[in-house]
Image (tube, rainbow, N blue to C red; front, top):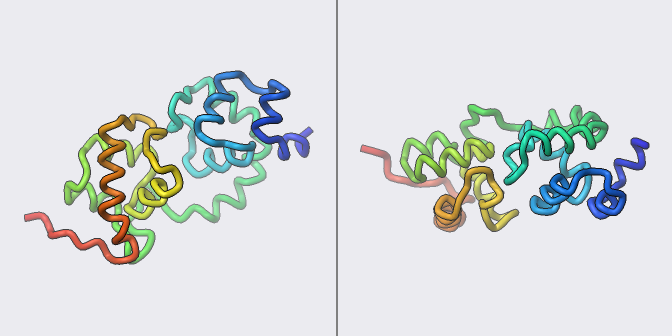
Length: 170
């Protein structure tokens, strides 16, 4: 059964009614296409609760459903994680969320959205924006934070290959 589950797409899961309608809606809304996507997200972020409208019951259901996939990716994925909660820089041309916070480039609420979603640097924020074109799927991100993050990415996205130059705080 495990080998069959690994190859299931979201369409197969829906057709066979293997998970609840709520869990299916979460997968559709977030763009998961298979078990690997769910497992990868869980291993990267440590939780599915950051996904909009995903509560404890839905997380438990999805994790139980793709437990074998999570275990198979765990060893491989653990070596790929290259940042921690106290991340400073991913590259020489990147600044951390702590530096963004110190320079007051984003509001406190928007900083909290980024921290909760583990977008700990300018590079990660821009990569998320390029992949999703919006931040509304992030937990606690409303229209104002979304607009603020989009304008932030548009302002500093062109500078992603250069070092961010912002005047130091007085």
